Amino acid sequence: MNVNADFGMNQDFALAKILLVYSSGHRAFATLHEPKNSPDGGPPYLDEGRPITMEFLKELGRQLGASLPREILPASVLVRTVDMLVWWKPRQKRLMFFGDASDGRALNGKTFPMPPLVFKVSGSELSVRALPGAERPSANTKLMIAPFWNTDSRGTVCQGSMRAPTRLTLDAITQWERAFFESEFTHAGLGAKLTKHPQGFLGLWSELAGGREFPFRYLVGSGETLQEFIDSGRS
Image (spheres, rainbow, N blue to C red):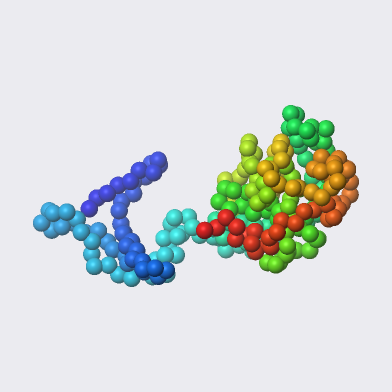
C-alpha cells in the first residue's frame, strides 16, 4: 500500500501504522497494525496486530510534538504540560494602555501597582486571576477576579489585536505577560464585577495611578480555587 499525505510542506508522508481502538463503556484498548499489500493484487489488508506499548506511545507523542524538554522549572511555574502553562507573578508595577475611544483614555500610559497574578495559557487561550495575598499559591488557594478590562468572569482574556506568542515554552512566559499588558484595555467583560472599589473600575485605577501597592480589599472573589482554575475548560 502506498498512501501519501500532503500537509503543506515539502515532504512526503507514507502510511506506516494503523491504530484500532476498541471501547466498551469507560474501558478501551488499542492494537497496532501494519498495512500489507495483497499477494494476489487484491485490496490491501492489515496484519494481525499487536498490543500497543507505552514505549510506542511515547515515541508517537514525540514525533507528533507532544513532548516536553527536560527543564529546570522556575519557582513561578505552577503547572507545565504539553498543552498548558500556568504561572504566578508577585506584586509588581506595570504600564497600562487604554484605547483612545474608551472611558479609560485619561489613564493611558500611566504606571500602576498590580496585585499578585496567576496566568494560564491553555492551547492558545489566555486567562488571568488575581491572588488574595503575596504568597505563592497552592492548589486550595482561593483566587480573585483580575481587575482588568478585556477579561470575562471566567478570567478568559479577549485577545483582540494582542500580539500573543505562538509557543508554550518557558521562555514565552515574559512574552505572554508583555502581550497582555502592552495591549490596549478597551472594554469591560460581560457580566464581570471587577472590583469592590466604590467608584468601580475607573475609580480603582484612577486612585492607584503612580501608587506603591495594590490594596487587596478592592479585589472580588472568583468563587474558585487554583485547582479549579487549572481544571476549568478541560473536558
